[in-house]
Image (cartoon, rainbow, N blue to C red; front, side, top):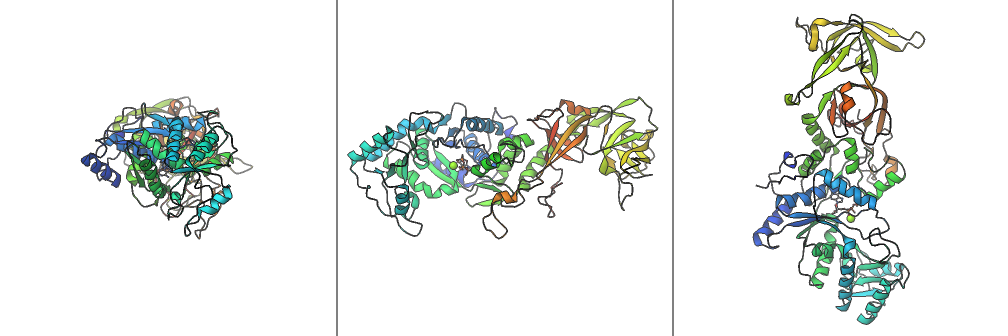
Length: 580
Ligand code: ATP
Ligand code: MG
């Protein structure tokens, strides 16, 4: 059945993700094409981002599909920057796109292309269309163009420039290129059918005047080709066999085919549409994500709350878990919204296997073990991952003073409270049983300052020789060797399942749905000493707290750990948006 090739440049092993056993409709098309030898046995796909923003999880789906198919069918996938809109594009975006695709585990090798590299040839194709009588220069105002275009229910009508002679069109188009006219004074349009029921076919604009510099071609051009014209011809020039795009381009397919047919190009890629990924509580339009960055709702494109690949990377999501997610959601023809919990499930499932277990106390309460010798430190054994003994163990220091979690002590415990309370015993993970003897308080405020406890030396490792049971087990950190640091707990960036959509389905400003509690920063955390070696690539399970990784962009002197995901699915039971 279908299997994926290993990608040598992948940071993790691609084949470790679930391999799908059923064939989706795109795979079926390719299998049929291979059988009928439609493209001489070749499979060439492309991922064509517009470099006007950072890649997001929706793009990850398209990347996995395109590179995945190329891997699977021993073909190739091109990375093409679809850079035809000089006003919004930037080199910063190009660099980030390349970094993100590689991070996700895919490699395009020498096949890195730019639509702007085709400008000369696209210009020649446009001239060819004019000579065929299939394109004309229109000089209607923007308002007139709109008016002549008609609506979904009403046909359009021909404007007064539609029947210009080929010579006049050639002359005007040359002069457009030479910069003789102002922006918006003329456009080049395909001459198709102003009455077509498909609006895309009503003489679409194929070139417009834009007197702006392009990040790659500089001031060479002052006319720029439109997306529909550029895209099919770029595909054709690169010998793409299957041009896979999202569903909103279905109505553009007749135009895609029209250009290639009219120009009688030597090859004719097939456009295939699939449903774009929508994710609950997540906004994916690049324009809106840019607004979040510009309006400082988030700290940048790589803010760990952003659905961008750089945000996910910083948050600690792994590329392999994202690929697994993309595989699980599958490829379909109908739009739908995927529950964010599925993405978290994939992350958690992988981290449960791979993450090193460590101890970190987020809200410390000091415990003095009064019967433990002063000045003594012992090194206790702690397994790195109970799910995987091959991950080994480490030593953790234990001494007379430790920190436990504030929440793990209650002076007046409610019924069924299994943690520490006066006179009661609790197990310290990997260490001993301790019993609380005394609560030391600030006499003026009544605030608990520390606990005085005694330990049972016969319970080393956390097990009692006499079979005495305790119900609660707490994590802890040794005071003398603790690392001070910060933890950031993330929640959904939006409180609405469909940001931008109100309770009654009406359109609302997504800004009103930003979750005011999307990040909680805890600044007085105590980490076990092994975390001094933490890198941003390493993921940890802080026992009982969730999965964490070191923030890669940390500006602070103390380490900052981002919570990647909680230990359990806290979405179930209606706790949405209020995750702890
Ligand atoms: P946006 O609408 O957010 O600006 P876009 O579709 O214009 O995104 P492009 O840079 O043109 O962004 O996208 C590159 C490729 O990624 C396209 O082939 C597009 O179909 C695909 N893509 C973008 N968003 C999604 C998504 N949510 N799900 C699947 N594929 C997507
Ligand atoms: Mg696009």
